[in-house]
Length: 535
Image (tube, rainbow, N blue to C red):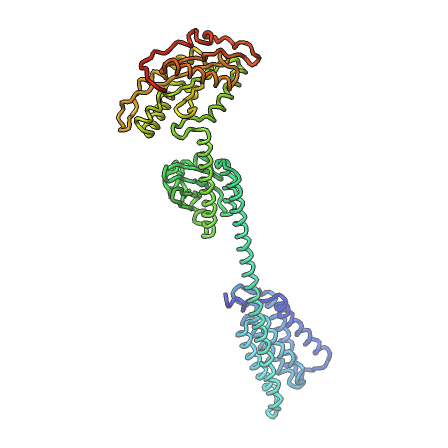
């Protein structure tokens, strides 16, 4: 590239080179027409005209020549030879006039210096000097002035060399300026690319951290990313390495089914499906981010593109962890940590929903309040670790003995609740009795892990609208029924002892299964398998 400047010809210099010959021909025609020069003989006149024809012919050749990329075709050996012949001939013809043609002789190397490289122009200057010398001594007598010739002959190479060297320096400066401009353009393009990448990463970061609903941002992230790294179709996976689980996936320009098949369900990194290739762009202790694109697009990714992918991947890992923690906090907010059951907060929300639904559609809702009998004694004798295990197993037994539509929950301590939608008091008693019997028959591990401990539960049953008219009264009624069961000897099922009224002070509604209070099918005492002492 350092030599390219030698072949760069500006349009102004090229036009001047093309017009110099027609201008010279016109000048020679005017000299002949004005009568300032008369040919001494017919032969010289013919030579004069022949030289004019040669000038015009070379002018036509030069006019149709175009510079080529790797060299100045406009300066060819035929043109140079013609010019040397013209200089020799006209120097010979104008030997008597002295300086009539001399300015043209000086201009020839100057014109060549404008369009040819320095080396070529210096060679042409030397050749022009030689042609001028031949023409001069050809037409002069032996006693011609050597001093005059020396002065005129030296001026030709000096003028040509000065112009050639100056023009070469100018070309070099133009070339350096052009390189600097190209370099600046490349730097500007690189800066624009970096700016667009930073803007894209910033935009993706803003999108990623704008919501904790991680699954909703995938398409937006990949739309931005695909424009930065210039890929038509791609997909991205955030994989939990410990659980072999895909935490997040997004696609752009391809069907989700194709992406799932490509990844194999968060499986093998580096797999290929048809013409797609997957490779990890970010590898964390727990999480890996995998990017998939066509093999052609993957090969075209530069180191900077991979750096952008890594930056975006790191943001996705942080967002995935935040989303995981958010979901965990949401789960813990409504879930009991020990038993995995819905907690007191979730029970309150569920009761509001079911009671509203029961009011709207004139349905029944029952609530079981379950308490482990003498659980403090169990904790004191077997230890709190065994007590925690017992609570987990009580929760599991309760969950195994209710319907899918029923909702068991941990009320607090050793108390549990079950919400029974569309269930009257009689149906609730059946479920309560089933739970009581299952827990009574279950054997719990002691402090040594041996399953030889028995526990019983007391259960209170309350039903809307037979025993209560809203959530608070239903909870009070179920709690009153539980204490009724406790005070009656434990290990049994009871309904409320006190008849509840309606909000306006009237009697509660009659349940379809029977009356409230200590009568009817809902108040039948469960058989007492054991009579534990203490509460």
